[in-house]
Amino acid sequence: MARDEIIEAFDRMRVWQRGDRRAVHKPLLVLYALSRVLDGDTAMVDWNVAEGRLKELLDEFGPDGSSQTRHHPFWHLKTDGLWQLDGPAEMLSRPAGATPTLTELRENHVRGGFPPALREALSRDPVLLATLARRIVDAHFPESIRDDVLAVAGLPTDLAETLPSGEQSRRRDPSFREKVLLAYQHRCGVCGHDLRLGHQTVGLEAAHIKWFQAKGPDVVPNGIALCSLHHKVFDLGAFTVLPETYQIVFSQHLNGNHETTDRFLAYQGAGLILPQAREYFPRPAFLDWHRKEVFKNPARE
Image 1 (spheres, rainbow, N blue to C red):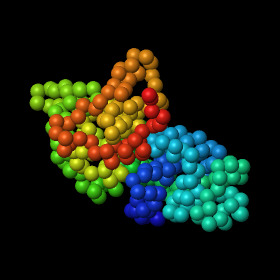
Image 2 (tube, rainbow, N blue to C red; image 1 turned 90 degrees about the vertical axis):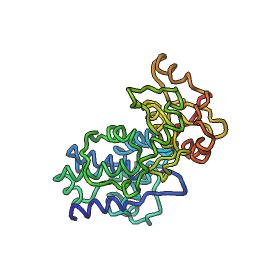
Image 3 (cartoon, helix red, strand yellow; image 1 turned 30 degrees about the vertical axis):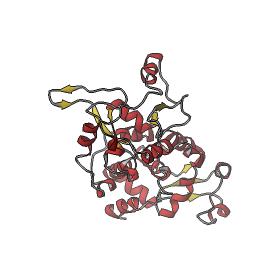
Image 4 (cartoon, rainbow, N blue to C red; image 1 turned 90 degrees about the horizontal axis):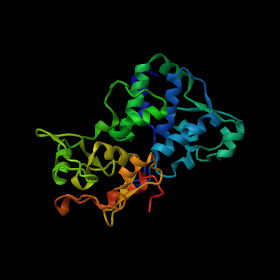
């Protein structure tokens, strides 16, 4: 396959989707597989080796509970022409939809990996590998956590910007940030951070509630003004905002030393600092999406 054909093949990778639900199983598996190639390990990987890494990636960056189906991409990626499997013939002859159980994959030591021609192409062209990794994170994760996804997957975070990502086929509204910051009077909706240097706002960002990568619109009711720290932990699922009361609720998975957690948890149960006009209030449907698809349950009381 030519370089452009490989990029197009990865862009066509089918990602399971039902309504607004987020599925990043295949993207995370591909990132893990790319990291193996980058490390010079081009052999197919036993499911017993891959399982722990995929569970870690899904626990960190997937919707709540998504690691329970961590074996699905290992089996189904072959239907995209990007993956091959090795194992007992009676298993591999099953229809594509007949997903093996975790136990079957473990006990039969099923192995998976990129087909040989693709592995060779990626091994000799690190720029191509970097291009694919960057396009995948750009298409499925917000900018605030992309480097975290790459790092946990085992890829360098300084991957060069190369070809346009799939995300760029949908144009962003360049005025989204300024509209959101104006609605929130240029202060963080959680902690009230409003630092300025001259006329420049410092460390304040417009966070999408429903991610742009999940087709969340660039409209003010889908945005919250957050300081860079609260933006990042919001995108990681450390806290969410209840649609009925606009109360801030933190995840039980958030931890650190007493001083750090006390600083965060001071806002537990507090109300979001709301925009200056009701028409800009966060839309409940977007907050509900964030609670279901990003927030790391269980919540603190």
